[in-house]
Length: 223
Image 1 (cartoon, one colour):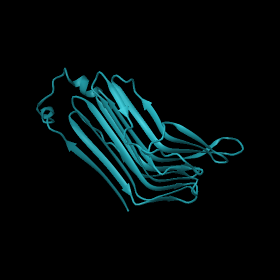
Image 2: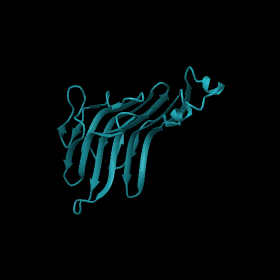
Image 3: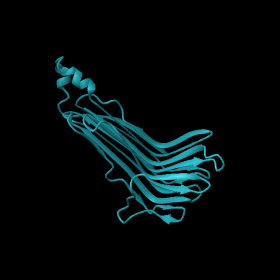
Image 4: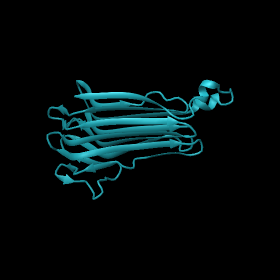
């Protein structure tokens, strides 16, 4: 069973927009933005792409907030991926500062017939901007009982060093805790975290033939 919801959240102070906004503040309002996306898993191959538990942040206006979430009981792509419950949640708001957060969770992950396994994982990203400084982080992202090709990669606190790459002989490679930043660090900041990102390659040519991503979260904030 899959459940998906999008909920607008009106924050205190929004009524002044209905009363009237001066032309002086209009350009600032137009520059403000937040965005976010989270999904439990995605499999891309020759036949297309399949994703589960996908949440995308709706449009957010000044002094308003919004939230979206999605969930699935499980996901199965034979020979490629099996999981138990997956969730994706993303939210954002704009006021004196712009802020967004996205979270994806997945339980009992098995990729490529057990080549990569994890009992659970959580991808969490947060972005904020106040007009003079913009930052993003992946605090709260964890991988539990992660094993890749028979080797354990989970530390005591459930973390893996960002952008850890492991070769998968005859398959391709995997990037663990992949982190992809964007923004100038002053007015804007964004971050995408893919906790498990497998790139499938042709064993003879090295050409990419597909990819698997489990636990993906993205957030951006601009002010």
